[in-house]
Length: 326
Image 1 (cartoon, helix red, strand yellow):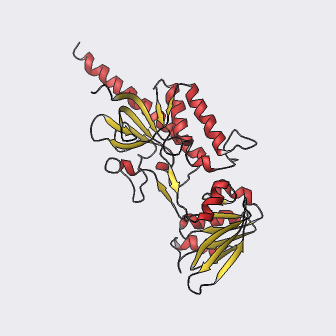
Image 2 (cartoon, rainbow, N blue to C red; image 1 turned 30 degrees about the horizontal axis):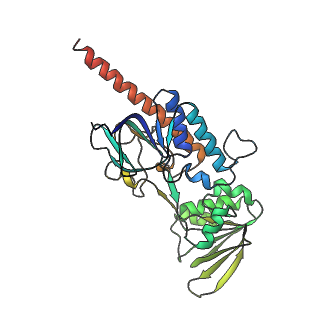
Image 3 (cartoon, rainbow, N blue to C red; image 1 turned 180 degrees about the vertical axis):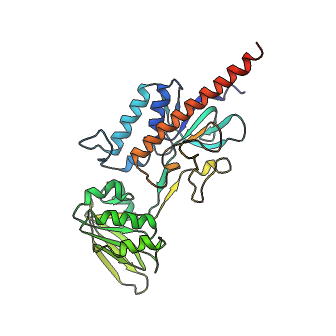
């Protein structure tokens, strides 16, 4: 092995609630974890202004503040938190190999993947503006719907998740306008029926979003165009929700780990184990159902415990095999 290759007991790829929680547990188990934060240190939660549904924060906390606290907690127990991201892996042999920024090579006894998933957005300049300002654009109704109680909102999407989020918002908001780009839903018939039968959900078919309108700080309306007639309307709204899917950040693992058709890593039922021994997954890289900070943290705990047990079993096997020859 080259002197330039680093050997680590536990490498954690990605930060956020999953990665930092895994780091806290791995550190306390004396696994000496090294965590690379990735291209977005702190993960998706750093784009969230207010987090009010994570236990332990009765007055709420901002996403960036929570991530800073989790990082400090992980570092307190000895986690080596580093800047940079993993650009290539090789899980084909007994040694798990990864490369940082296409340069540094690391050989790992265990790897915990916490790379998360990125919400898909429409890509409109105005959408991105108010997303960055935290002024009314969101990709998570469960996370942010509470802030729009008794207000009017717009949601874009046509799949099961969009229907589910629209229905969730309908229980909080005065009115929900749902924009569907085509002349039919992609959702299952039962989910489509649910939104169609909800009185305060208005569905506009064949309708595209043209612009998110605001006062420079907060969203005030959404401009939309009917694809068939060309008619442009402005829909009053204080919130604009995008529900057109997520993309798991798992491309570098293709060819080594089992992924579903969307790219989510497939874990063994009831565990964080993947199809490769010694490689574990936590958070939104595997979770396409819940996608919450608290569930990500829970799977981060699972991954660290599974990795610890894996290392213990390997040590026990080594002790048994060597004692045979003594």
